[in-house]
Length: 172
Image 1 (tube, rainbow, N blue to C red):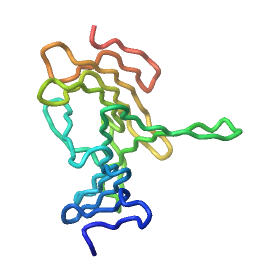
Image 2: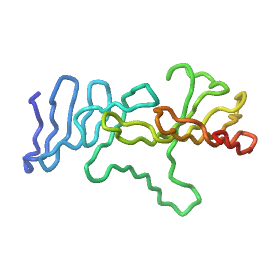
Image 3: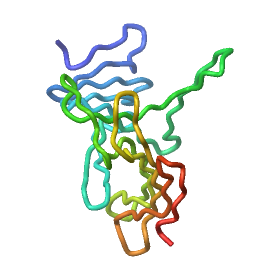
C-alpha cells in the first residue's frame, strides 16, 4: 500500500501511514487523528504525552490536545428522563475473566492538572472507591475530594462522603 491514500477530488484530505503500525487522518492539510502501534488514539497531536498521578507517570489511551479548544462532548436528545452518560468502571482479573473488586479499590478517578514548567502535575482529584464488601448487585461506594498542598506533588483527601452517607472533613 502507498504511504498515503488521497481523496480523488480533495488533495489535502488523506489517510497516511507515517510509521510502522500507525495511521493518521488529515483534513485541510493537517493531521487530525492518529492511532499508534500501542493502540493509543491521539487527537491534535502526533505523539503521546505522559501525564502524572503523584510521582508516577502514565500514558493515556485517548488524548486530545489543542491550542484553542480541548473538549469532549456527550449529548443525548430524547423525550425521556434518560441522561447522557460518562461511565468509569473497574474490575479485577482480566477482560476475559473479570473478578470482583475489593474494599478500598478505586473504581474511578478524575484528575485536574496544570503545567508546572516541566510536567503536568495534579492540583486536585475526585476519586470513587469501594467502601465495604461488594456482593451480587451490591457495591458500597465512597467519594473522596482531594487537593494538593503547596510544595507537594501528591493530593491529600479533604472531604469524604461514605457509603453510609456521612460527610467527613478529613483535611481539616
